[in-house]
Image (cartoon, rainbow, N blue to C red; front, top):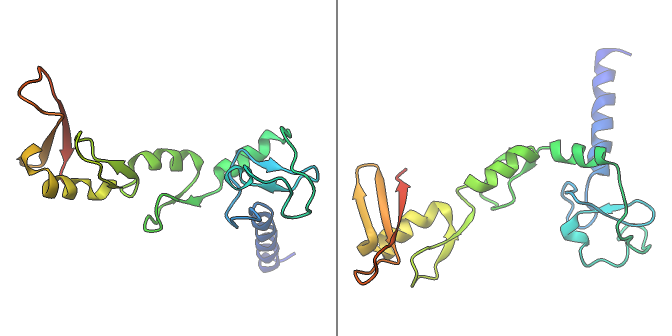
Length: 165
């Protein structure tokens, strides 16, 4: 087999694997833990939580089906896009994605100032504090501190330091 045919054959195999690992409901790559029917068709745990019938063969969904840990390991290493926001373009494997979700600028966050119910993307938090909580903000060079739950009647208050970017 020449090199071109070998590459074409490998590409064909990879496409078949990719199709096999696609959730029939959300059409994304399967995520663990999987939900399976008695014929071993799989869906993502989030897609399958309320399913009673398999979307592929219409058989009953099975409870507590054991599947090879190898499949979990493969799914964990498949690169996937960050799903926190359509604007986040990061693509990485399971371990990297888990870490990324804690620092993604598009992750959801709530304002920690007691009287505020604002929720939004992390990257807009500083702008929110500057506009809505000027009295709680101290700026000094590259760092800012917000005082939350501040009152002169209380013996303590919490301080949040944010780096400006």
